Amino acid sequence: MAAMRLSIAAFVITLLTACATTPPPSGDILPLADHHAHLLSPVTSKMAGDPPLRAIEVPQELATLLRAREAAWNVPKSLEPLYTEDSIIFDLGGPAYLHGREEVTKFIGTRFARAYRITPVAFHLGSDSGFLSGYFTRGEGEATKHFGHVQLSLVKGGDGTWRIAAETPTFPGPMKRETRTAATLISELDAAHIRYAAVLSTAYWFGSAFRPPDADARAKTQAENDWTAAQVAQYPDRLAAFCSFNPLQDFALAELNRCADTGGFAGLKLHFGNSGVDLQNPEHLAKVRAVFRAANQRRLAIIAHLWTGADYGKKEAEIFLDQLLPLVPDVPVQIAHFAGGGPGYTDEALGVYADAISKGDPRTKNLYFDVATVADEQSEATLKTFAARIRQVGLHRVLFGTDLGPPLARQSWMIFRTTVPLTDAELRTIAGNVAPYFRRR
Image (cartoon, rainbow, N blue to C red; front, side):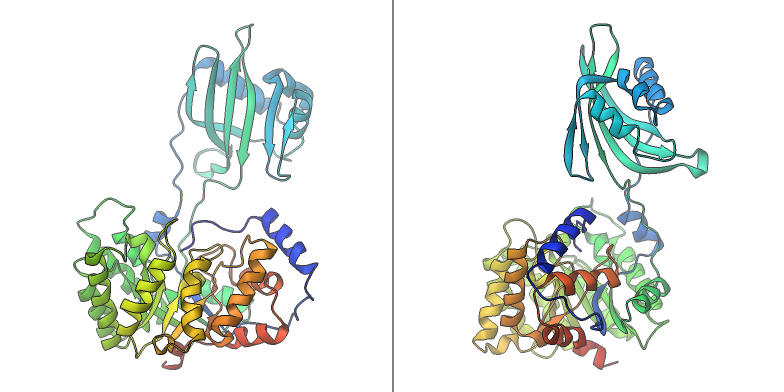
């Protein structure tokens, strides 16, 4: 999955820039299918969230400062003594720095309509400087809600009083994920007038290279795949399930065959980045080749997130084209995020596939690309290159997708169709594309 999502400011800038140079697309163009969607089980919703850090006690002088700030939250003049004369704050809405006690306290003292407090989670005080990290908080007990993060830089004045020298707020936060069921997804699809969705299990999280080894990874992987299949089975005419696992795990082939035997899955989702796959490592490549070979034998389509980090590019794409695609001649292969990680994509890697397609390379006959999050937060120049690459690989190979979100399906399609400089005819073709793994249902 992608790690970052579209900010409102970035989207507005991108939208206004693109719309200034291209005709507005027709509003009646709507996609038939979302080829890259996820659910969150009760287990993975906790993994996807950002559990708040524990609130801590702070020294009396800091507690006094925080109480005074809370009491004066909407009175700029009362806030002024709490800040240094040359204090500074970062305004995300600008985005811009506001400088000087009067400007800073006017901003802080007029920002929120309801009172709030700062919940400290970390601090350090030196002889004359320090910091405090915390959350913006409202409510008490079970009704407590953190709605933002804040970092305060502190300075001790000659009078022995601690004051705020710099403040950096960020919103929202901390992120809390709720269980995301098939019913929730269907509701979102209906709002976007989308008929079908490929539901990609997040079971590969239990074999993640970024988590400590887990002796129960196999059982948890199976349970997550089964939960996904059970959810999708409630809407068999609209949803297609994809099982997943870390292809480097010893149980990878067994789980692939188990998923195939259930008859509840249209394909397999692989996430090379999350799984720590390095295609330049012969041992890794051998394991992934075995998975691809088995997927073709069991007629499971493959959706693969290939981006693995900053060094990912042409070399990895060449290995995928030469060593993996030939093993799956009988099933569709969908490369996620247009051969990138989202937002955006990796043009160096995409170029390998685009050139092969242009030359009629038979290995690419069943190759597709989803555009999940690719248009998010991109410059006008990048969007133009993106459109050119879409035309090069062929409109019929380009599949709309959203990822986990936000943004959700309706917003994702709006971002794509209003920022990528494609004609209405091209957008209609992409919107009408439905991957072959839906047709087998």
